[in-house]
Length: 159
Image (tube, rainbow, N blue to C red):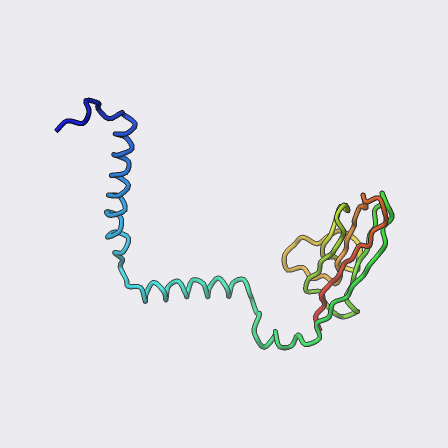
């Protein structure tokens, strides 16, 4: 039987070979992929132990009992008007003797946050080190809007 007198192009031959290798490759890999020294129950147990170890390393002494002690969580807020083409700075701080857990800020479109983050005492540089305690959240913002804006900053405080 003859197919119109034309031989297949080299590109078609390469494509057919690639398809055959791809199909055969997945068929060959499947038996190898399912072969293991231990069964699925053992694999699940090992994965669970590894995950628990990672959680324990990162959480340190955090426990559910300590989480229940945080019953007086509050959010302290601060707002300030920032005039056109000026930079405004504001901070929100926790009451004395309380520690901050986190914070954030909100500014309208067209304004540029220059510096924002946790700090101690509501001034100074933003704290970037892990595990360093802080009691306030600061914001420095540049207003590029044609009219004044209101910038907001908040801090979440523990009990």
